[in-house]
Image (tube, rainbow, N blue to C red; front, side, top):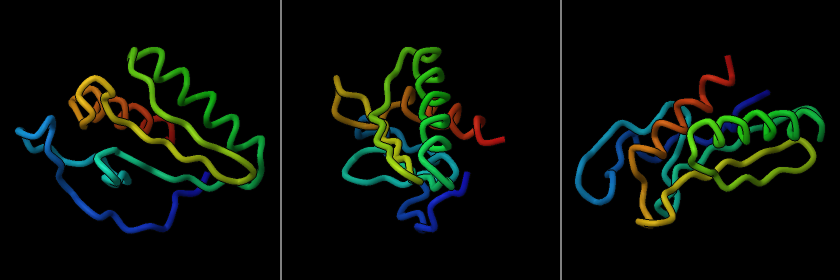
Length: 101
């Protein structure tokens, strides 16, 4: 799995408009959502990664928006109830980062 070559736009973000936290490594804030893009050698590599992310979402009871196809996957995380980034989003992003190791 290869990470996207996009440079992070922010290193901190506001949770629910108040508290500032560090944006998880490799993630960007795009339109009020945590987002990360991944590159793979083929469709099956992207699908296998999405399957792992889906399992992490279930463990955290917090569900990301997942997009994938041949050679790529995009993960977007935000809290639908508040339409903002919350600590649950940051925690899930960190859990997804741990899948890469």
